[in-house]
Image (cartoon, rainbow, N blue to C red):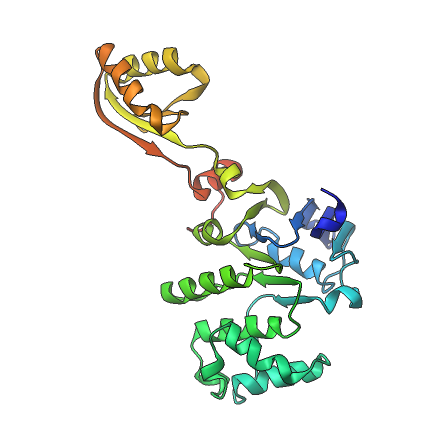
Length: 304
């Protein structure tokens, strides 16, 4: 893929605070134009620092980043980027619409796009209400509306579901899916594994400042597998290994995990029964993004 097809690309991007704190460590990130990209990692992994470097808010220690074909913070790229980094802050006694009006004037933007931005986040009917009366979910959505004022090519959202209840999280997921359904690129950072799995096309996994995996969600999760609960377990394992190969059979929590197409379940069952094995359960399994994350990070914490 040629470089112009990337909305964001970094090469060995590094940020060191003081002499010892390496917040971001030689990060190689590639966000394709038109995709929803999930930047996944636990709190403190370096996600927000990375986004701040991409926006030119934090000085890069070493390495290189390109955002929409320009260096981070370049005025020609910033006018095409909308961002919500950390919790958005607004004037509490101004209405949602007036807060956006202030931001538009400060950024030298036309006020004509304010209602369109409010409508995009389902706040048009509450645009005349004071910000202090907004729920947490509405405040987050107003932050997204502010990022949409430029009608940006690239939308950067840092933990947009932070502090939301389940209903608010569901609303935000639906909003992000809508915003990423056209030509716009969305770069979404999150520590919520289920959130990323539901809405992102591709994922980059960061741990302790370093990118440890990148790819489509389905690619990272790998193919489907089959769980078998049978007795005696040793005999079941021996027969399954003879049938599928040693590398495709794993014993976990008293069950067999077989790397096999679930459509092969009847054949597997028949072979095990013919070998004198009693099969009490056999069902397809798919690894979640949480399973992959825990394998990659060795159990470093993240939330579902």
